[in-house]
Length: 397
Image (cartoon, rainbow, N blue to C red; front, top):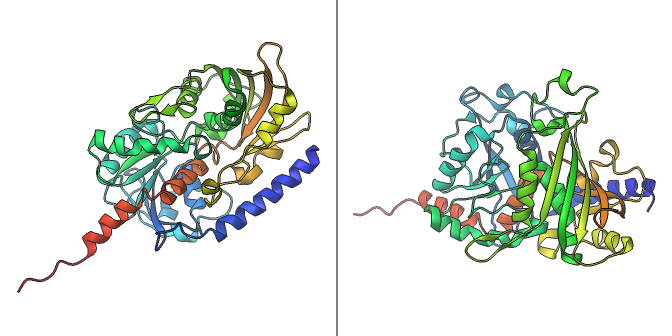
């Protein structure tokens, strides 16, 4: 595939993705859309979630919540909007609520800062809300799924154990990984399945939007590279172990990889680029590696989700690709784009990976997680419980 043809293929994929979202029927057993709330709705990831929920075929945005300084205001007044286009009409006049677990919704997305996310997410789960979190606080908890649906959907089996351990009724917490981990593990999964993995060495070139708003000071990042992102290397070295590991019915068992990461901030707006070298358990030629990546396909259950794409890894052959400016929106920003697959003189193979840090790595990842939870009925218990509360008790005479 030429670089030019891969670009056309990406555009076609995005068109198909948009059509799939608009045509996705509600899952069996669902009578109406699920009502979604967004915690941390005024932040950069929260704004992405608000925008992604516009005209979503399964979910409707009914609540937005944020810090005390924003609560009580209309969303359009409280938010400093950073995305293309105006604030969506469906969100403009929603009143921003405080972070109190009394929202009128069936589940919540959490895009909260880590300074408040941990306790707040637990409060909502304890109050019966399913919490779909983008925050880091509970990712490595022993009973909380760290989820990429294409990689480890079976880890949702841990939810009943979490509810039992913590005394939750209809509530629970599910997290998505760090933005730099997301693209990396999406590419490692087909390699692990086909050949097995022993060691991974990764160097990241991460976009400034990954730091949130206002992010990195302009005089620090302009015409510069900052070879340090607080906590990032630790996340990249620990999260893949859980994602590629197994749930044995009682606990998560790590994948046992040798993994080393160097993380750098670069003056790019969107898109994390990663240069990785991999040691495989089974000998494979470059053609076999490319085919394993290119043929990676989700099953029918995942393909039916509105935000899913059937082939979440896109392989391109241009010697200077992928590039954030050209390739970051592949698959509507939900694909990991792979290029420069070649032999590594130290390990076995090396390649370059690009993923959209705010979509595949944050808001889009949380949305896809919520869709899988909805499809598997994890939101239904709270909906049923709320419906039962609204049925008037019979009058005794």
